[in-house]
Image 1 (cartoon, rainbow, N blue to C red):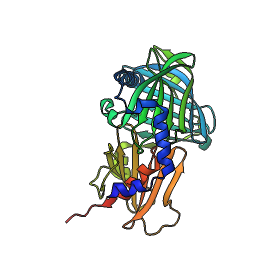
Image 2: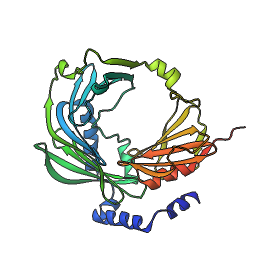
Image 3: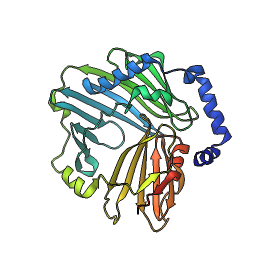
Image 4: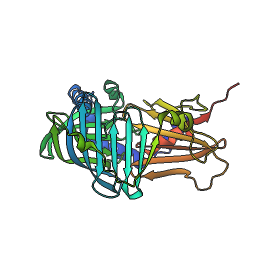
Length: 336
């Protein structure tokens, strides 16, 4: 009943757009997942964690366009990555195994945080490749030359209206990701990553991974133990979903204690192995200065609503129907 009520809200134009998108790819979206494409994606996942390289890429989300330089080193001690902005605000991000350092020279500040095992910036977080075929058609595409290197295209096409599609271009020899596009239910590209140069290296000098820190920069280190005690923790859920879009399952449940907030924020993450949706639930006694209903931030759709004295905010790089579905399905858990 609930799922059908959400489906009723999808406009006829949106359904026609999805049908047209599937027709654009011919029968590919209805075909079985291509084993060769799965093999290429497995190679991409391995390359992201095993190869050292220096490159420059352009990243666009909505109207936001950034040029970044990436220096990535894989050694016996672990994985190291340095991202340096070449446009917009001057900043750097250093990832060294389980530590992430954010450097904001314009603010004369440095933030160091323990962050588990962060994935490489250019790695696509694809889980359980063999299981994605139920919700996406994964097929080999054509060939293209990117950053003076030969690539093969992989098309990941959604089978329903609850997820976006992706197109990936992988370098033919290394399987490194050189270009990616995320497209919405109308076939519009809403996010793009494109390498303009890439050089593989057997060894990256350690000095190239060192951050550019000025003498007067203020350093704030967020200790993982302190964050566990005061910042966030695993907790028993106070909310749950009455239903989820097909293929989505709960991946994360945490409770965050934010500054100047008396009550914690409950954080749920749901995913289908490729797409990911975050749900934030906080106690609120008014509706002032909050986002209610649908909104959009670049390629990210957001849906907010009040329920039982709480503000529920759902966001993700998925169609609006998906975030609305999950927002309206959230309900408090009643315990004896």
